Length: 258
Image (cartoon, helix red, strand yellow):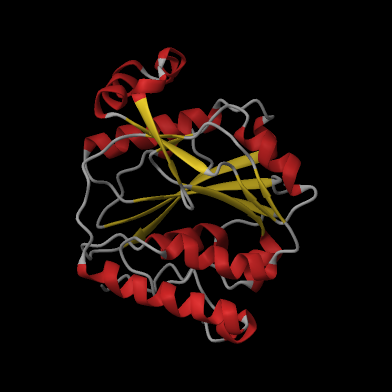
């Protein structure tokens, strides 16, 4: 059986019933794409103490479970696991609380014909608490009735990014030295832009579901140091920096005992 053209990789660690509902809505927004379903697959990488994602109920192509007992969510590790467990020519890394517009996959695949790196939108639309509750309660049909006052726009680096597999591997994936969250997207883009021949920016409507804000853990500040290191190498040359990263990544057992 041949691989699909695109794999959508969704990293996930449950924060409770609300986050599971958000994942369900995101998966349904992806399953309802205008593109033929055989052109892409949806893979969730769950890192947790025990599995909570029901592959059959959500209609997922694959759930990769990596046991992880530590408090923090190792997002970069989860994304790399998704890349290692699939074989498609291109990857779309997508957050578990970011609703996809129905033309996301078709637009991304169209641009990947001529670009190695595709960002679906320069902006993220953060739904208000009330609007998010409405969508969670009523489902995706509620999106059609959203008003501009139901969300606020902000520049967004992360959330959703697509890249062809070859330059992803040359960049050595996401940097698993990043713990928790913060800075990992930007650091990856610095390296990906170096290994990619061209980049395209789309302007799709990406909706971010509201959730309780989590205070940055201590590891967040270590992440900022790692990001600053990558920025310094951007000015001096990225080849040496990329070569300093591990050649192997996405090992499902790498942090099992944490």
